[in-house]
Length: 219
Ligand SMILES: C[C@@]1(CC(=O)O)c2cc3[nH]c(cc4nc(cc5[nH]c(cc(n2)[C@H]1CCC(=O)O)[C@@](C)(CC(=O)O)[C@@H]5CCC(=O)O)C(CC(=O)O)=C4CCC(=O)O)c(CCC(=O)O)c3CC(=O)O
Ligand SMILES: NC(=O)C1=CN([C@@H]2O[C@H](COP(=O)(O)OP(=O)(O)OC[C@H]3O[C@@H](n4cnc5c(N)ncnc54)[C@H](O)[C@@H]3O)[C@@H](O)[C@H]2O)C=CC1
Image (cartoon, rainbow, N blue to C red; front, side, top):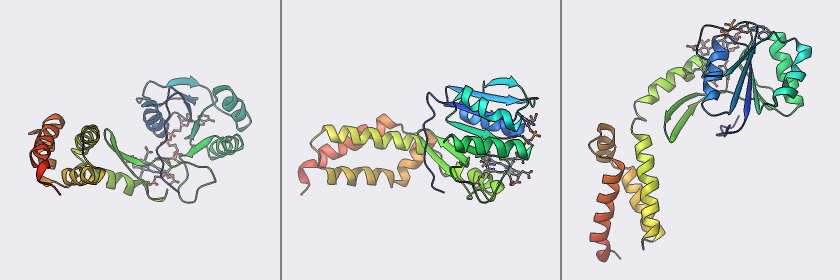
């Protein structure tokens, strides 16, 4: 399987099953999808991320109607009934809809999606998957990665803004690459961003000032 980032803006996600897992997946997709619909005869007493909750039990023969009605970009099969989850996965595949089957590990059906453990330091995102084999390990590694990734979001803003500033000035692409690589490899800068001693604007001002004063000496 190949990790990709998928934009769910404007899309609908259908979650079948309103237990602990259905709630977690609904919260995850509600961050971005315009509409998240959860269909289940009962709902766990949990946060569903503002998703629309519809009280109904799907029969395998109903699944196609639900897909036609809701037109989801992705469907999550998260009931505790294997036959229902299987029918959801089959119907979704036939319609070319992405499917995340929450009750299966190991080998995946064609077209299937795995939800990885994710660390977000906006706009940086790191996702961990064990190829659908060991979710507890994905969770463990996600927790381990939270500390080293602290400050990465601010570092991304520094790099992006700096690249923009350097592009608008008379700096060659090679020199630009050198400066940005130097910034991202600076342990002192990481510490400053993590502790809040420095912020994006200050760093850029400092780097540009250094570059302008040193600019004449460069080959
Ligand atoms: C294949 C996959 C399909 C999918 O759901 O996409 C899947 C399947 C299954 N998970 C099961 C169990 C658990 N899952 C978690 C947690 C997470 N599971 C997630 C993803 C995935 N789970 C996909 C593979 C990802 C990969 O490639 O590694 C995470 C990463 C993302 C998310 O779901 O949001 C999220 C961590 C989020 C975070 O914290 O960062 C915990 C830990 C806990 O709950 O504390 C447990 C209990 C401990 C254990 O059993 O390992 C079971 C057994 C059910 C049973 O038999 O009881 C199955 C089905 C089976 O194995 O048959
Ligand atoms: N992917 C993951 O991270 C994990 C997956 N699992 C798997 O996912 C399944 C769901 O886990 P939980 O949420 O903990 O189970 P749960 O038993 O709390 O929830 C199942 C939900 O499915 C609903 N449901 C049952 N039949 C339905 C139907 N015909 N139509 C619509 N909804 C229906 C139930 O009302 C309930 O809300 C488990 O059976 C297990 O195999 C379990 C733990 C973690």
